[in-house]
Every structure is written in C-alpha cells, then in structure tokens.
Amino acid sequence: MNYRDFLQKLIYKIINPLINGLVKLHITPNIITFVGLVLNIVAAAFFVYAAIYAPSDMSLIGWAGAIILFAGLFDMIDGRLARVGDMQSTFGALWDSALDRYSELFTLSGIAVYLLLNGYPYSGVVTLCAIVGSVMVSYVRARAEGLGIECKVGLMQRPERVVVTALGALLCWALASTVSFDPIWILIVPMWIIAILANVTAFWRIAHCYNELNRRDRNAKQ
Image (cartoon, rainbow, N blue to C red; front, side, top):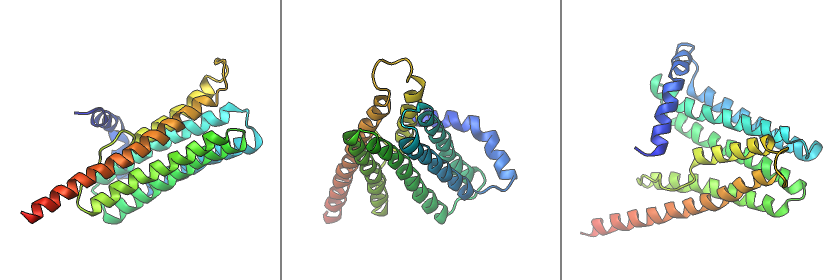
C-alpha cells in the first residue's frame, strides 16, 4: 500500500460519519463538488484582494491557504459520497473533473495575480507555468483514459498540488513574523515545486502512454 492509499483510507474513516449524514439528508455529490469550487473561488478572491488592497497583510494569504485546504476535503467527500450513497453517474464524473480544473485554475491564478502585482514578476511567471503543468497532468490522464490506458503515474497529482499550495500559503502567514527573509518566498517556493514537478509528471505520463500504446500496437501486429 502506498502513502496515498494509506492516507485515503485514514481520511475515509474520519469522514464516514459525515458521509452517512449527508446520505440521510439527500445531499448529492454534485452539490458537494460545487461547494468546493465556490470555496476555491473565495480563496482566489483573498489573494486578489490582498494583491490590490493589502499586499503586506499575510493573514489574508493564510486565510486563503486555510480555505484551499478545507476545500480539498470536499474533493474527497464528493467521491466517497457517490460510492457510499450509490449516486455515481457518468455526468457526475464529468462534473467533478471539470470543476476540479476550475478550482485549481482559480486558486493558482489568484496567487499569480498577487505575485505579478507586487513585484515578483518572475515568480508570477513560474506560477503560470504551474498552472500549465496542473492542466496538462489532468489532460494527459483524461486523454489516456479515453484511449483505454490507466494513467496515474507521477509525483505531483491534484491532492499533492492542493496540499503544497495550501501549506505554502498557511506557512507564509504563520512564519511571517519569525523569518529573517521575505515571507512571500514561503509561498513562492511551492509554486516552483509545482511548476517543475507537475510538468515532469505530465511528460512522465506522456512517456507512459507512449510505452503502452507501442506495446498495444506490437501485440496487434502479432
């Protein structure tokens, strides 16, 4: 069992009572997914507000990180609710995937706006690269699955990206008064990590698909 499976089972044990309550209240997974999107939009709004009106107020960055982390729980709740409540559907899978992309685009764009408007142009560009990487990781997997290939390889999948982003923002606020350097770097470093590892993951998945498709073609010719 890898660490992701272990953490997933642990979190499921914690949230199962909540899941059972949502089933009894007839709350659908699609509603939970939408609430997660709204929370991520709120987090992005915190970054944009801080960028324009209060660039030195690290508490706004911290609140954004907390909201992103909280919204990440909804990303787990909707899938678990669909399975436990027997509410899985083809449209639900599409809805979940589409809104996950929107959520991540909103939060990373909020960070990019903050950095670009407050004297960190290179780091803002790096964050834009992180956006490209996050989109391509998901796109390659979706395209691969459309071709009948399971494609979950890589180091920086969505859960990792959410946690890295949220912790970067939270620590930026929590450590702002204790570090001797510009605390914004505590947020910038995670953007570099995502920019590099997400794009590495995207190309890793492309290579995986290349090998799988070549193997399939060879088998078809035999």
